[in-house]
Image 1 (cartoon, rainbow, N blue to C red):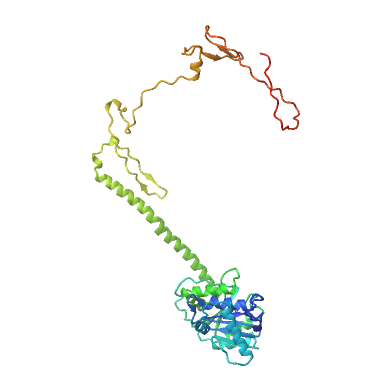
Image 2 (cartoon, helix red, strand yellow):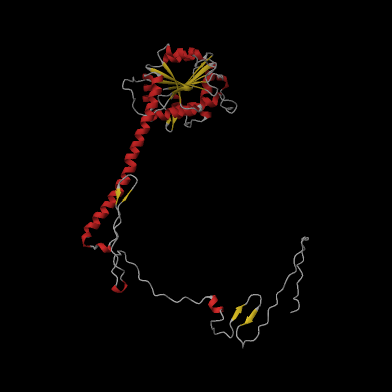
Length: 402
């Protein structure tokens, strides 16, 4: 398959490996070529990138990768790629033989003439995919075509615009599309989504889907029926696939968990029955009634083990199945503060004191010595208007007369 980048806003002379930061003429060429042709082991054998400029075209094949490997320049950097392309551009201008294999350069030609030339060289049967935001959505999913009568495709040409699109080239116009139709190549307008991506991102995505084996079957289905029917087919597949996936999840994810839980409870009941459930007295076992969950399935809980026998002195009244721990004898409560301070209770202290309201501390026994009252310090009332704070501490107040 081939990637055609319509880059007619720039000229071939603007490619410069030393000033790649100055424009997009060389950066788009390098990124698109590396994303579409290179993978971790080198360059792909059956991939070709053709960049159409305003005054010429540059075509790159996998022979460039073999040439760079011989020069021990395996890394596909901007310098390695663009210097090889620049060398062939200079050789073409000076009329010399090309020194770098895998790079073909045509100068002083228009974009339409170059498209006609390469369309005549495309091997049939072929199909063209023109990237258009308003085109049909391309959604590779299956490794085999859905339509049984889909015909195989030998060559797939992906036409994509540069940073400014392909409107200035005229390829996206009806006249440009007629160039494909006149040569027996069907051109479909396709889209990858509502977001406009970089050319290198689209090139890499196409290769990922092709390596997974999903791109060719999808293109075969698109080429077998009209675009309107393909849109309807895609919507139907989306709905059916979602319903099927939801049913599969409901049957294989949720049901086994419920079955395993029910099976575990049944196994527990069977094991308990094997120990001799009939030999256990009914008044020693508290059976839990069955509980039904939200799905209507009866859920039985395991019976409780029999409680230990208790002596007859602590037996509960008849009719109770559960056993309770015997209650301890009641202990006398510790004396509280009120009972200690009450004058009616005799204590071992010389005199029991009680607080009388508004009378100070007074002795409660007749033979007790009088307790002198305490002197409390009373601060003067604060003023209505607070003054400024002072660094010095407040003066000490001396007690008044007793």
